[in-house]
Amino acid sequence: GDSVTQMEGPVTLSEEAFLTINCTYTATGYPSLFWYVQYPGEGLQLLLKATKADDKGSNKGFEATYRKETTSFHLEKGSVQVSDSAVYFCAAYSGAGSYQLTFGKGTKLSVIP
Amino acid sequence: DAGVTQSPTHLIKTRGQQVTLRCSPKSGHDTVSWYQQALGQGPQFIFQYYEEEERQRGNFPDRFSGHQFPNYSSELNVNALLLGDSALYLCASSLFSTRASVGEQYFGPGTRLTVT
Image (cartoon, rainbow over all chains, first blue to last red; front, top):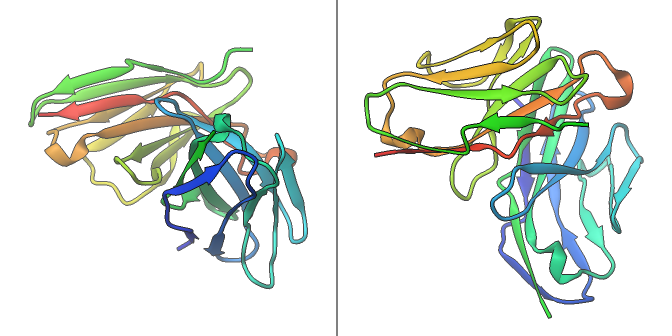
Protein backbone atom coordinates (compact mmCIF):
# COMPACT_ATOMS: atom_id res chain seq x y z
CA GLY A 1 0.00 0.00 0.00
CA ASP A 2 0.84 3.66 -0.08
CA SER A 3 3.13 5.18 2.52
CA VAL A 4 4.30 8.68 3.38
CA THR A 5 7.46 9.49 5.29
CA GLN A 6 7.95 12.87 6.87
CA MET A 7 10.86 14.55 8.49
CA GLU A 8 10.79 13.88 12.21
CA GLY A 9 10.11 16.78 14.49
CA PRO A 10 9.80 18.80 16.46
CA VAL A 11 11.23 21.73 14.54
CA THR A 12 11.90 25.01 16.32
CA LEU A 13 12.63 28.15 14.29
CA SER A 14 12.97 31.82 14.97
CA GLU A 15 10.50 34.18 13.37
CA GLU A 16 11.38 35.04 9.74
CA ALA A 17 13.54 31.93 9.35
CA PHE A 18 13.27 29.67 6.29
CA LEU A 19 11.26 26.48 6.68
CA THR A 20 11.63 23.15 4.96
CA ILE A 21 9.75 20.02 5.97
CA ASN A 22 10.70 16.97 3.95
CA CYS A 23 8.14 14.50 2.67
CA THR A 24 8.60 11.44 0.47
CA TYR A 25 6.01 8.95 -0.66
CA THR A 26 5.63 5.43 -1.96
CA ALA A 27 2.52 4.81 -4.02
CA THR A 28 1.05 2.90 -6.91
CA GLY A 29 1.01 5.15 -9.94
CA TYR A 30 1.00 8.89 -9.48
CA PRO A 31 -0.92 10.00 -6.44
CA SER A 32 -2.25 13.44 -5.64
CA LEU A 33 -0.25 15.00 -2.82
CA PHE A 34 -1.37 17.26 -0.01
CA TRP A 35 -0.13 19.20 2.97
CA TYR A 36 -2.52 19.58 5.86
CA VAL A 37 -1.99 21.74 8.95
CA GLN A 38 -3.37 21.09 12.42
CA TYR A 39 -3.44 23.93 14.92
CA PRO A 40 -3.63 23.05 18.64
CA GLY A 41 -6.99 21.59 19.58
CA GLU A 42 -8.33 21.67 16.04
CA GLY A 43 -8.96 19.36 13.11
CA LEU A 44 -6.91 19.28 9.92
CA GLN A 45 -7.00 22.09 7.40
CA LEU A 46 -5.96 21.64 3.79
CA LEU A 47 -2.94 23.87 3.20
CA LEU A 48 -2.02 23.08 -0.40
CA LYS A 49 -2.10 20.34 -2.99
CA ALA A 50 -0.58 19.11 -6.26
CA THR A 51 -2.18 16.56 -8.53
CA LYS A 52 0.54 15.78 -11.07
CA ALA A 53 4.28 15.80 -11.52
CA ASP A 54 5.97 19.23 -11.51
CA ASP A 55 2.85 20.92 -10.16
CA LYS A 56 3.53 23.49 -7.48
CA GLY A 57 0.95 23.97 -4.75
CA SER A 58 0.99 27.21 -2.82
CA ASN A 59 -1.02 28.93 -0.11
CA LYS A 60 -0.36 31.50 2.63
CA GLY A 61 3.31 31.76 1.63
CA PHE A 62 3.83 27.99 1.76
CA GLU A 63 4.90 26.08 -1.35
CA ALA A 64 5.53 22.48 -2.32
CA THR A 65 6.51 20.98 -5.68
CA TYR A 66 5.54 17.47 -6.81
CA ARG A 67 8.81 15.78 -7.78
CA LYS A 68 8.17 12.44 -9.48
CA GLU A 69 11.90 11.65 -9.92
CA THR A 70 12.56 11.84 -6.20
CA THR A 71 9.00 10.93 -5.09
CA SER A 72 9.03 13.99 -2.88
CA PHE A 73 6.75 16.87 -1.91
CA HIS A 74 8.75 19.05 0.46
CA LEU A 75 7.01 21.96 2.17
CA GLU A 76 8.77 25.35 2.19
CA LYS A 77 8.15 28.84 3.45
CA GLY A 78 10.54 31.72 3.09
CA SER A 79 9.75 33.54 6.33
CA VAL A 80 7.81 31.84 9.11
CA GLN A 81 5.66 33.62 11.66
CA VAL A 82 4.68 32.71 15.21
CA SER A 83 1.19 32.02 13.88
CA ASP A 84 2.60 29.20 11.72
CA SER A 85 3.24 27.12 14.83
CA ALA A 86 1.27 23.92 14.26
CA VAL A 87 1.63 20.29 13.21
CA TYR A 88 2.06 19.73 9.48
CA PHE A 89 1.01 16.51 7.75
CA CYS A 90 1.96 15.32 4.31
CA ALA A 91 -0.62 13.04 2.65
CA ALA A 92 -1.04 11.04 -0.54
CA TYR A 93 -4.16 9.95 -2.42
CA SER A 94 -3.83 7.30 -5.09
CA GLY A 95 -7.41 7.04 -6.32
CA ALA A 96 -7.89 4.17 -8.78
CA GLY A 97 -9.86 2.10 -6.30
CA SER A 98 -8.18 3.44 -3.18
CA TYR A 99 -10.11 6.32 -1.72
CA GLN A 100 -8.16 6.95 1.43
CA LEU A 101 -5.68 9.64 2.30
CA THR A 102 -2.44 8.15 3.60
CA PHE A 103 -0.74 10.45 6.08
CA GLY A 104 2.74 10.88 7.39
CA LYS A 105 3.26 11.03 11.14
CA GLY A 106 3.33 14.80 11.21
CA THR A 107 5.98 17.41 11.97
CA LYS A 108 5.45 19.80 14.85
CA LEU A 109 6.69 23.31 14.10
CA SER A 110 7.26 25.87 16.83
CA VAL A 111 8.17 29.42 15.83
CA ILE A 112 9.62 31.64 18.52
CA PRO A 113 9.66 35.44 18.42
CA ASP B 1 -21.10 27.80 3.99
CA ALA B 2 -21.09 25.32 6.88
CA GLY B 3 -18.01 23.17 7.12
CA VAL B 4 -17.78 19.67 8.49
CA THR B 5 -19.31 19.38 11.93
CA GLN B 6 -18.87 16.61 14.47
CA SER B 7 -20.49 15.73 17.76
CA PRO B 8 -19.81 15.37 20.54
CA THR B 9 -16.59 17.28 21.05
CA HIS B 10 -15.37 15.12 23.90
CA LEU B 11 -16.47 11.79 25.27
CA ILE B 12 -15.35 9.62 28.16
CA LYS B 13 -16.32 5.94 28.17
CA THR B 14 -15.44 2.84 30.10
CA ARG B 15 -13.82 -0.27 28.67
CA GLY B 16 -16.39 -2.59 27.13
CA GLN B 17 -18.93 0.13 26.42
CA GLN B 18 -20.17 1.21 23.03
CA VAL B 19 -19.95 4.68 21.50
CA THR B 20 -21.54 6.53 18.56
CA LEU B 21 -19.93 9.55 16.96
CA ARG B 22 -21.70 11.78 14.46
CA CYS B 23 -20.65 13.81 11.46
CA SER B 24 -22.34 16.24 9.07
CA PRO B 25 -20.43 16.82 5.85
CA LYS B 26 -19.64 20.14 4.22
CA SER B 27 -22.54 21.47 2.19
CA GLY B 28 -22.58 19.89 -1.26
CA HIS B 29 -20.38 16.94 -0.34
CA ASP B 30 -21.64 13.39 -0.70
CA THR B 31 -18.80 11.26 0.67
CA VAL B 32 -17.72 10.81 4.28
CA SER B 33 -14.51 9.25 5.56
CA TRP B 34 -13.52 8.50 9.13
CA TYR B 35 -10.00 8.59 10.54
CA GLN B 36 -8.49 7.73 13.90
CA GLN B 37 -5.66 9.94 15.14
CA ALA B 38 -3.73 8.63 18.12
CA LEU B 39 -1.71 11.12 20.15
CA GLY B 40 1.37 12.25 18.26
CA GLN B 41 0.48 10.28 15.12
CA GLY B 42 -0.99 10.96 11.72
CA PRO B 43 -4.62 10.08 11.02
CA GLN B 44 -5.32 6.45 10.11
CA PHE B 45 -8.14 5.63 7.67
CA ILE B 46 -11.03 3.68 9.16
CA PHE B 47 -13.56 3.62 6.31
CA GLN B 48 -15.38 5.68 3.71
CA TYR B 49 -19.08 5.91 2.91
CA TYR B 50 -20.67 6.88 -0.35
CA GLU B 51 -24.29 6.41 -1.40
CA GLU B 52 -25.01 4.98 2.04
CA GLU B 53 -22.58 2.12 1.55
CA GLU B 54 -19.12 1.40 2.88
CA ARG B 55 -16.88 1.87 -0.13
CA GLN B 56 -13.52 1.12 1.40
CA ARG B 57 -12.25 -0.02 4.76
CA GLY B 58 -8.90 0.39 6.43
CA ASN B 59 -7.18 -2.02 8.76
CA PHE B 60 -9.64 -1.77 11.65
CA PRO B 61 -11.56 -4.60 13.36
CA ASP B 62 -15.26 -5.22 12.93
CA ARG B 63 -15.88 -3.50 16.26
CA PHE B 64 -15.73 -0.35 14.16
CA SER B 65 -18.83 0.12 12.05
CA GLY B 66 -20.55 3.00 10.37
CA HIS B 67 -23.55 4.28 8.60
CA GLN B 68 -24.40 7.00 6.13
CA PHE B 69 -27.84 8.54 5.96
CA PRO B 70 -29.74 9.84 2.90
CA ASN B 71 -28.76 13.42 3.84
CA TYR B 72 -25.08 12.29 3.64
CA SER B 73 -24.45 12.61 7.37
CA SER B 74 -22.68 9.70 8.99
CA GLU B 75 -22.15 7.83 12.23
CA LEU B 76 -19.19 5.90 13.52
CA ASN B 77 -19.92 3.16 16.05
CA VAL B 78 -17.32 1.43 18.15
CA ASN B 79 -18.30 -1.60 20.23
CA ALA B 80 -16.51 -3.27 23.14
CA LEU B 81 -14.25 -0.29 23.70
CA LEU B 82 -10.60 -0.91 24.52
CA LEU B 83 -8.16 1.45 26.18
CA GLY B 84 -6.32 1.61 22.86
CA ASP B 85 -9.38 3.15 21.20
CA SER B 86 -8.64 6.41 22.99
CA ALA B 87 -7.92 8.89 20.21
CA LEU B 88 -9.19 11.84 18.22
CA TYR B 89 -11.73 10.66 15.66
CA LEU B 90 -11.86 12.80 12.56
CA CYS B 91 -14.56 12.94 9.96
CA ALA B 92 -13.72 14.17 6.48
CA SER B 93 -16.06 14.96 3.63
CA SER B 94 -15.46 15.16 -0.10
CA LEU B 95 -17.23 15.20 -3.42
CA PHE B 96 -17.00 11.99 -5.37
CA SER B 97 -15.90 12.04 -9.00
CA THR B 98 -14.82 15.63 -9.19
CA ARG B 99 -11.64 15.77 -11.21
CA ALA B 100 -10.69 19.21 -9.96
CA SER B 101 -10.80 18.17 -6.35
CA VAL B 102 -9.62 14.60 -6.64
CA GLY B 103 -8.65 13.30 -3.23
CA GLU B 104 -9.38 16.63 -1.56
CA GLN B 105 -11.00 16.01 1.81
CA TYR B 106 -12.25 18.54 4.34
CA PHE B 107 -11.95 17.67 7.99
CA GLY B 108 -14.10 18.40 10.99
CA PRO B 109 -12.70 19.40 14.38
CA GLY B 110 -12.86 15.84 15.66
CA THR B 111 -14.27 14.01 18.64
CA ARG B 112 -11.82 13.29 21.44
CA LEU B 113 -12.65 9.84 22.86
CA THR B 114 -11.13 8.77 26.15
CA VAL B 115 -11.59 5.17 27.29
CA THR B 116 -10.91 4.47 30.96
